[in-house]
Amino acid sequence: MAFRFEFDPVNKILLARFEGQLTNESAAEYHDALGKNWRATDARAGIWDFSAATHFAVTPDFLRSLAMRKPTTPGLTSHPRFIVVPVTAGYGLMRMFQIAGDSSRPLLHVVRTVDEALLALGVQSPHFEPLE
Image (cartoon, rainbow, N blue to C red; front, top):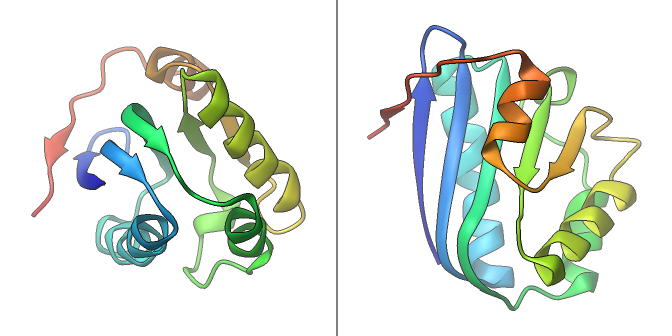
């Protein structure tokens, strides 16, 4: 699975767009990259967009263990984050991740569209720029 990060400097939203197959390995790689990009941008909200994911091959046990790990990036848990998953199977997995990690990620939400996440954040016209 490939992913890329974008940032809206006005609204301070970090956006990650995913393509391809989500596996345990790609999820772990993304998790590491997330912390680096969150710190580099000093984001105040995050949207993780799985709309272009073609297959969810990540195991429930791996997602639960990832969810139960306390986030190591300062500020990450005190800002809203949204996981966007329009596909039902992936949506169910990410809801499981949300529920399993509720105590360490209280502001994490799973939604069906990026527009739904932006509406919840009160943002009407974001301008995302690619991050290196």
